[in-house]
Image 1: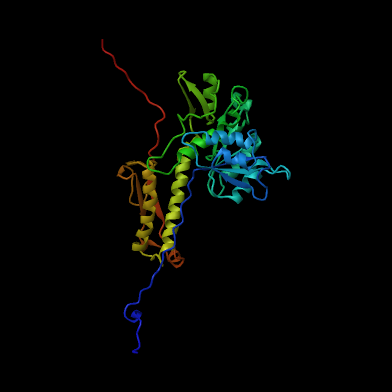
Image 2: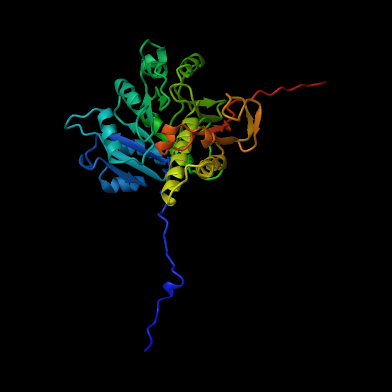
Length: 378
């Protein structure tokens, strides 16, 4: 029989399967840390999707983690996931040390709360979480009378003076009797945030005006409310005997939690988009054309933020950035730029660096108050 030649002599087909792009973090998972011994210290954290799963695992209806989880899962929309961590009291271990161990055990949670933390713990955790990696946010509840009186050195004033942007405090004086759950009011706020943050189109939200299921409104005077709001600590209040909602939705430095959360999401989305691009290509050339590929990846991340409703069209009024100056309209709500490689230094080129990318964006924001003028002619 004649020798048969393979077709690859004429047409050689090479099949390359691109690596699967890593999914970006969801930023919709919370962590509750407590002293119960259900979870072994060696494991440190477990993920739950329901209260029933916690009971099946060994928690009881009176466990502090379970009580806080009741408020977390009890909000609307309901969060999908909750991590529960153990504070090992046999060591002994501080709330900060427990939280650090939980972070080492799992990078998946963004919001966190420690059931038995007190003022000194809140301050220690605030200093750590401000620079923690991955980026996170700490929720706490306090009934400290020093906060209400405005005494020097109270926890809310210390966190405010520290300029912490990753600490969300709730003041609850009524923690027992008719309001047994208020000791964990911050867990309810955390549940609202994690349940609302679906990442879907138009999912951007503000925490102000949100009801906290299972939490009782605070019996505060107007002067007390004014004093507490000045400390950037959040309150659950009744309005006109009709509405009950959380206000103001701020972190300790006065920024709004939704801004911190969405900037974390955007930063992460940009990182993952760029890294996924780098690993999907044989190489990205160190040219203006290659830089355009990087910019396109950043565009994708910004478009996701537009879809969520965090970025909106407007007129740029910030500083001059390359070709962008104040007064320029941004129809998409953002502009991504970089300089030309003609201006790159020899050292940066030798180090195979890309040109720096600059993202200018306009936040959509959220309306928290309204003034209405009514003019009547008789």
